[in-house]
Length: 345
Image (spheres, rainbow, N blue to C red):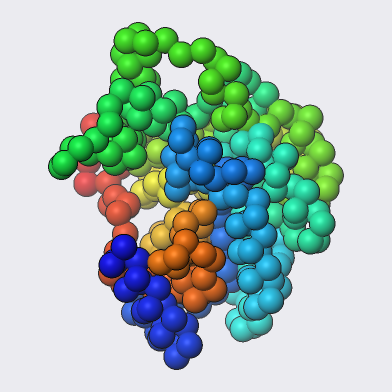
């Protein structure tokens, strides 16, 4: 509570004085187009957070508050227009913003798309192609659900979220699947339990594309690319692009790294697969492929709430300018790559 109160007060001061922009520049954030990222959009955050990773959720009401605040200060543009500006090294300082949604959850179609269409806001959806139209769910969703069901932390014990994040960041996906199988064998779960986590169908994606939204790639199976072999990374990047183009009959120029995880091998694989633009979750750039490591700011339900749990434009301003990065830093392992299952520097 004290930490939240301090954050709220500091955000108000920084946003009013312009210190949020200064702090962001000191943390390594460079001036450029704003790219915002979301994951799931739900009707009731509190209810969905009982079974889902909270930081991947935003309620429709909160999403609208974010978009309205941003829309009063930025002009919304599509990823194609944003990419063209990046490619041309457009030095204009007119404030523009692009909105993106990762993973391709079906609730984008139910809750986000109607809001975006009503407000006339272009957006992009990055899809995990092997899950499109399938009755299977994201590895991270299943792992978190099983861990949260298995134990309730107390004292210094890790939370289900922290345990999930640690496993995802340190193990290749094949090993995580084994952990999931072990947890499931202890107490099987009905498939209906995971229905809220289902992905979009190809028919939905075609309708979304025809509504003016951009469809981008998020790999075939949502692997964290810094954890996988060079061959797996190449297959994930190229395979997802080919599948989207074959199914929707449209070119795919945009790629988002799952969980923002990338290294030099991952970026090279994305380049080899034919993408022109790639999006991360931090301010690190690959010197050889700067257009394939464009930064994004990820937001969720409580990311811009004050100490009273209310939406705060001051905190959103600090998030947008990455003022808090000066303290938190970057947790990604950009310098490592994995060759045949072995990590090397």
